[in-house]
Image (tube, rainbow, N blue to C red):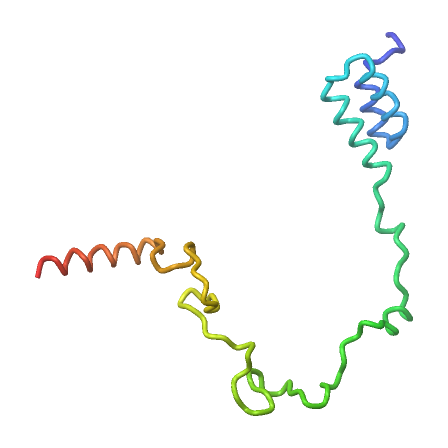
Length: 141
């Protein structure tokens, strides 16, 4: 048996054994001979990707001190003049501007016409069936 392997199989073998640089170099040699070889392109791309892949273990783990001294912590007490106890109300007792009326579809009323969310669109089969029979029966009377 000869000691020479098919170059693509040898490159695949390097890839499987996690020898990504050897795999990429062999794929480059194959691509110099036939630049339209898709298998060589894909294998080279995968090898180069695996070479720069960052494992979660390599990332510096955040310690307990960094977690406890986080600058972006949420305040435990509300600021003076605000109320978190009664949602939908402000200091004057009226409804909040954040609570706006919504359509039957659940979308907020903005004053802009959205053709895809209008009631003219077909709903469920049951709604279509009901509308069809309602129209049909109204013409009989």
